[in-house]
Image 1 (cartoon, rainbow, N blue to C red):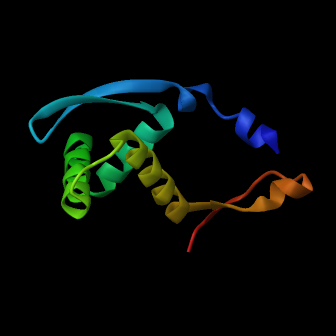
Image 2: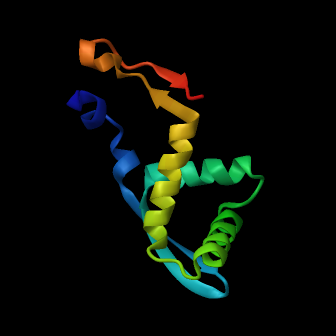
Length: 105
């Protein structure tokens, strides 16, 4: 089972810090490349730039909760939610077969 996790591309878990402006404030966010890639995919599907998508998400959380705690963690969890809706991994690897990817319903 660990091969599924250990053999992932190293680039995916290397982190990168990106600077952006949200609500007129400059900030930086450090995430692993796999999360940046997923956020770019989400933004693209929403026909937005990544900066515009992150600004909109931040504003919506601010409107809903009154404040935004740990935006980087919110982004990671958003990516997990998005991926869980797009792709599900079938647990065939428990029987020694290669895992299959199928669309989640």
